[in-house]
Amino acid sequence: MLTEIHKTSRMGAALEFLSRYYTDGEDFLNRMVTGDETWVAHVNVETKQQSMAWGHTGSPILLRKARQTLSVRKLMVTVFWDVQGILLIEFMTRGTTINSEVYCRTLKKLKRAIQNKLRGLLSSGVVLLHDNARPHTAVRTREVLRKFKWDVFQHLPYSPDLASSDYHLFTAMKKWLGGKHFADDEELKNAVTHWFKLQAAVFYVE
Image 1 (spheres, rainbow, N blue to C red):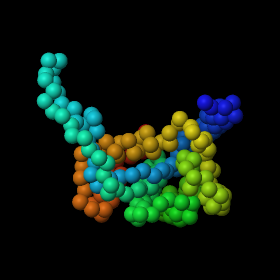
Image 2: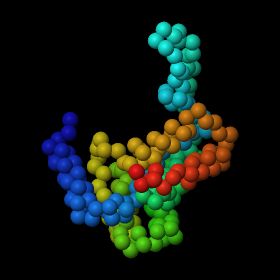
Image 3: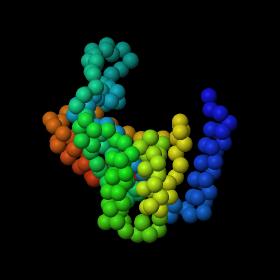
Image 4: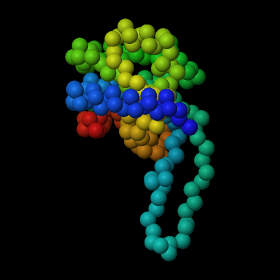
């Protein structure tokens, strides 16, 4: 269903990435900061892998997994990170939504976090990778990023290439959350924050 323009744009983005990596090597990856949002819930269903039971080919099926509804008690968390680890974790207030104004405030907090943790990164130049969600591409957001003089790497609409948070960071976190229950927002926030900080440096490098 993609048009020729879509296909050409995707190929152009891929070639740009390969060209930058060919020119700058690991320095290009080391300057990359990526971020995204995801939901975390008070009550988390076990993954299929976690609920599996050992048996042989003739074993009767003794266990049935009850149908569960998704927890309505959940929080949205925004996470920014790089090869050295977490730069910023921010939980949304319940009942609020992310728009360009909220996202711009988050980006300003991210800049301060980079100044505090990785001052050299600002001088060498941040390469920002985030997806094409509306708050990320709004005029207000683009203006803030222009003032920061950050290099924003394009993530094309309807791209099958997921942002790295989706297929690495959040996937591992959701697997860890499987089967866990939390009594309130604070317990959930503390647990998720602790998990991010507990990951070894190699986890973020990979």
